[in-house]
Every structure is written in C-alpha cells, then in structure tokens.
Length: 190
Image (cartoon, rainbow, N blue to C red; front, side, top):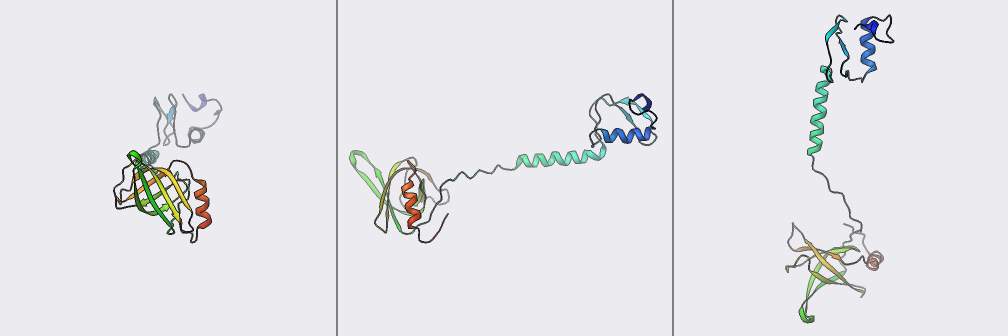
C-alpha cells in the first residue's frame, strides 16, 4: 500500500502523508489496528502492520508518569466530610449536671463541666466514669435562672481525654439554640 492508494492523498508525497496522518489521528501518535506504519527517515512503508495500539516512545514516559500519579492519588487517605450542622458555643455562665435514672425511681446526679454546647448536643467533662449509650437527663441552669432539662444519650468518650463525653439530645432543641444566641455575651464559637 502506498500514499496513492489512500483516498484524499492523490499527488502527495510520503513525507506530507506522514505529517497529515499524525495530526489527523489522536495527537499523541496513536495508531489503530491494521494501519500501515511509515518510517519518517525515508518515507518507506514497513512490511508489518500495527496489530495493537502503539505509542510514540516520547509518550511512554508521560504515560508512566500519569499512571504513577493516578496510583499516588488512589493511595491518599480519604478525608471525612464535615457533616456538622449546629454551631457549637463555649459558655462559662451555665451550670450543668447529669441525672442518670436508676431502678425504683432512684437516680444519680453528677455535676459536670460544660465544654461546649449546641442545639443538638453537648460536650461535658467529669471525673466520674460514664457509660456509653447510657440514657441521661441533662440539666442546664443559666445565671439568669432559666433551666433546661433535656433527655439525651451519651454517644462517645473522647480518645484524648478519658474524662470528656459527647451527649446527643433525643430531639433538636430549638428553644435552647435560640436562648443560647440571645444570652451570648462574648461570641466564642468552636
């Protein structure tokens, strides 16, 4: 097969054929199966046909670089999406205690330090050991005299400090969230 046998290339020499062939295909020099390969030095057609996808030697290093970059990106740890919806406040004007219901209406009240608070839950610290997944009643007393009693569950213990516990309220407490905003003196968010 010669340049004269290819439709649209009548009267063009092999050098022009090679240049147009390279630019008409994928710009990376990719040839598909059963297409003749022409040497650039003398313009002569090789005896063999391309039987599989072929690449320029110059592109093989780019391909290896892109494959190693893809491998690197695949190995990167996935970042957790921040799904926090409520704003957490740091308050020093709220006294807090946890009431743990017991048998026969006996309950145990434990004073706790309020680390931060939101309308969905709180972070508290205490010297006493608390059980995870334990149902509690959190009592919050503001300096203004307003008291909130909120049912919740202890959902976690901090891995850094074994004395900090996360408590999730059974229901969103919009009244508490509104009151926190109304009475916030210094704006300290976490």
